[in-house]
Length: 170
Image (cartoon, rainbow, N blue to C red; front, side, top):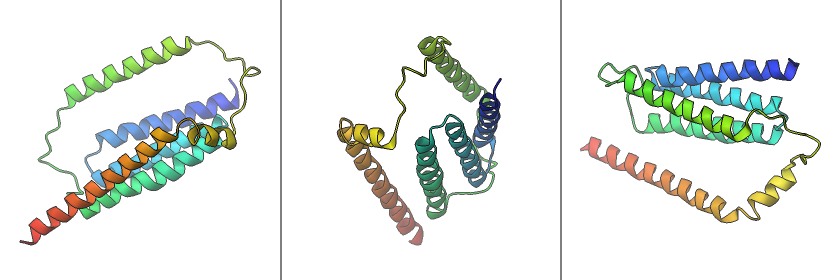
């Protein structure tokens, strides 16, 4: 095993453990903070795999924006932040569905790659210029549709929050 393999395994274990804590903690804010650790571990995995651009996009967009948006949404909607005793948690169906999804993803992964070694001499290295040309060239329509979808979700969250706070004031 090389140092790359060891680092990838270490960051993978950290990411999996943090992901497990995200779904098992009863505190919503702590779940958000564990999500930061999980997404940071995934960014570290990308760095180990020399995908620096993807790692920094992971940090900036997911850790920097999505988690902050999640925490602000919790604070703006005045949702209960602490552990909820009245939460209905059915653990066995959730574990069964999660396990089935994990097995299904592992089967797809194994079937797709069949544990073959990739000849790195035949693969052209990716650059930010090539990625930008692909995203804003042939993938510009899905990119714009996604931005419209995210904008409409943000507007919808604001409308729901304003309506809820107006009802609470009455």
